[in-house]
Amino acid sequence: MAKEVTALPSPRRRHLANWLFFRVGSMLALLLVVGPVLWVVVTVVANAAPHWKWSVLTTTTQGTSGGLENAVLGTLLLLLGVLVIAGVIGVAGGIYLAELVGTKANGKPRGGVFRAATEVLSGVPSIVLGYVGFTALVVGLHWQLSLLPAWIVLSVMVVPYIARGTETALRQVPTVYREGAEALGMPLGYGLRKVVLRSAIPGVVTSLLIALAISAGETAPLLYTAGWSVDNPSFSLLHKQVGYLTYPVWEFWDYPSKQAHYLSFDAALLLVVIVLILLVTARLIVARTQRHAESRR
Amino acid sequence: MTESSNNGVGPNVPLDRRDPATGQAPGPVDPALEAIDPDRGRPANVIATRGLSLRFGDKTILSGIDMLFPRGTITALIGPTGSGKSTFLRTLNRMNDKVSGFRYGGDVLLDDESIWASHQDLLALRRRVGMLFQRPNPFPMSIRDNVVAGVKAHRIAKGKQLDVVAEERLRQVGLWDAAKDRLGDSPFRLSGGQQQLLCLARALAVGPEVLLLDEPTSSLDPISTENVEAMLKSLAPALTLIVVTHNLGQARRVSHHTMFFYDGALVEHGPTEVLFEHPREDQTERYVTGRMG
Ligand SMILES: Nc1ncnc2c1ncn2[C@@H]1O[C@H](COP(=O)(O)OP(=O)(O)OP(=O)(O)O)[C@@H](O)[C@H]1O
Ligand SMILES: [Mg+2]
Image 1 (cartoon, rainbow over the protein chains, first blue to last red):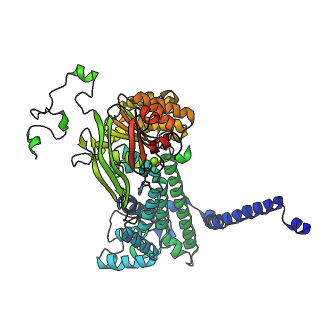
Image 2 (cartoon, chains in turn yellow, red):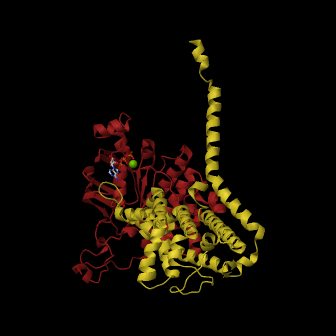
Image 3 (tube, rainbow over the protein chains, first blue to last red):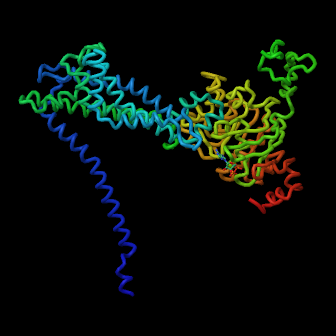
């Protein structure tokens, strides 16, 4: 009997075991998440830094050499369009789902059809969306490879993320804010803008950020819709192909020429930098708008 | 157009202010008289419920509630948990209208007009009948912006005037000294009691006639509670207050009238003193002597 008792772990030992388990476990988990990210950044920087020339930003691509000005401008233009088109539609859709559809008699929120549609949409591979855009817009409407079909296909691709992100963020806003606004006699839309949306901003901004990062990193749908151009983008929406950064990453990296390799890694580095800038901007916006938030007393 | 509005009477002049003999709107009020008694010529009861019943779906929450709320008085609502006090209170500024399955019977009159009358503007109604909640709920904006949030929404004032309004209302609730150097700060750094006073300032800023309070001090410590109670008492002659409370001492301290709810029915009501000292009903007696609930 006594032997059995001593064989049990002492509270202290159990404490240590627990501590080790959670500490080591959480470290491992962290490593699993952060590791690949670091690895990607280090690889890209290590491959791009030795030959980096700032002229990459100011010269356009010549064949498979030259610079990437056209691709940087093209990517930024694509992102701007996605931000406007998908941002407006996605955020409006999220507001609609969270605030306006109401609930059914059984207490479940309405808007199931819209929600199911966004789920299906987010499950469709981007290359399929690209192909559909190609047949319907580029060929079907004779728009040719150009900016507008690329904007549309990318937007269709990311609207579900933004809508669901916005909806979730809005649903997490405490009821007391809504009731407070209502009890003061604020009109629905006014209370939504001034009180409710304000505290949902972190979620909305994060979903916009993810949408932009996804768009910046897409290749397949752009090959089908934007094409590729070595000229800087013009303001024509149709009939003119557009360059973007994922193209050289994808196309040039196994070219036999060293210049092509260099451009490929430069483009990858620029993509990483753009995503980082997006991230920092998002953090700044959140910090700026949330300085009066309940969570940051 | 109805006949009465053909009479040159604007649709927003309450019926009761018209001369009963001629049906005309009242002439201009002597400003001196208006200053002495701004409620002159208005119904004595600012709110009246007439056989008010309420259901959510199949569930009857309130049944047949008849009650008058005289202008400028404080009424306490007491009763065991689940007896329908909050529901009753929230009905008065139509916060229940959107609850699924909401159905009402009877009526609620504000200055002798049904709150559900088709010409009632819901937003204007809520401006007249304000509300303070159990848990302080400042908005996620600066202290100053909180006070003037409703003022801005109703476009009562703008620009520099807003600062004046903010100061005036913060002074009124006794928060000015604590808040004057941190008007741009987050309201969530204030104590719970101060947050509740801030919410009170916000509700007062839109100039309500009636204030509904749902257990306004139940999340506060005794000293903050005392502060808020003192504040409520000082509001009474100018405003009509209806306070739900589980604190019988509070009901006795602050209210003129008390209503006792049980299971969705108004069992008994009367002057606070009488209801607590000489209750007519057994249920009331058991509740106020602490043998129930
Ligand atoms: N939205 C709703 N849908 C369905 N039933 C509800 C709803 N809100 C309240 N009820 C029901 O109405 C009854 C009265 O609730 P109410 O909140 O008014 O009680 P109360 O007297 O305020 O209680 P407490 O003292 O605990 O706050 C309860 O049985 C409650 O379950
Ligand atoms: Mg309640």
